[in-house]
Amino acid sequence: MTVKSNITIMSWNARSLVKVNKDLVLDYCIKNNIDVFCIQETYLKPYINPSFRDYKIVRLDRWNKERGGVIIGINKEINYTPIYLSMQEDYQMEVVGCKLYLKNRVKLNIFNIYIPDGNLLLSDRGLEKIIDTVPGGEKVLIIGDLNAHNGLWCGCGNDNRNGKTIYEFLMKNSDICLLTPKDLPTRINSRTGRSVTIDLTIGSASLASKVSITSDKESTLYSDHFPILVEISQDNSIYANYEVSSKVNLKKINWGAFKNKLQETDVQSRVNCYEDVNGKIETFQNSLLEIAQELAPKSERAPIHQTLSSR
Image (cartoon, rainbow, N blue to C red; front, side, top):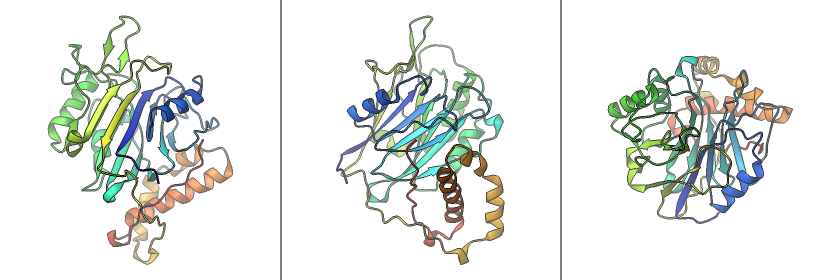
């Protein structure tokens, strides 16, 4: 395992991984020692499967409309579990997540979010649902293009609906805080040439003293958004030597609850993200395993290492 003193996460709205040379993205990640990349507006469809060497992929495509889509790439040396949320349409956001198993048994839940319009977020129910999925004692990081203007993080003087909703969400959750520095340039307005702050990083309050966030204004990646680099300090290696296990005590599972959870989980959408049969089978199996582990008694649970083919 590679020994590092921190973990580096990149967030970037690519405005299409279809037209952008994915090798440029990969080269950027390698050059900047990116451990996890979170990309919004991938424009990917289930039949488009770019591979990223040295990274395992978790993604959600906007299969029924144009554009959209979110993807997370995790360094292959990090143990992780994918997190898929069944978000109702009125939540107005695209979300995919992963749980990283780090040093000292620290678990970091990362959620990559894209909200396509600045006035869509009429309530914070979607954000609350994300927080509710994170077990007590685990860290959370919400990152992405939220298209949100608010004086708390941007001096543009023009709060929009998304900004007001996120502000209200932060005010009522004392254990969650805004990590993005005020007026951090994250996007250039093509009409005015002014920089704005609409790509945000929100996370556990306990991370505030350990996080450094910058925007790469000199990036050679093509987009009107700058790559956002989030560096989280660790004492020693960021990689935990977990004994990965997928064993679940089937006798301990409430099968009635399992059936109900299976109905709530949109397994079909997950499976449809893959064109090849092996990808479909593996995703289906892992979906069942995730639910089983969630419902197993706590003493029986063990982290799962998701092994998706890089696409």
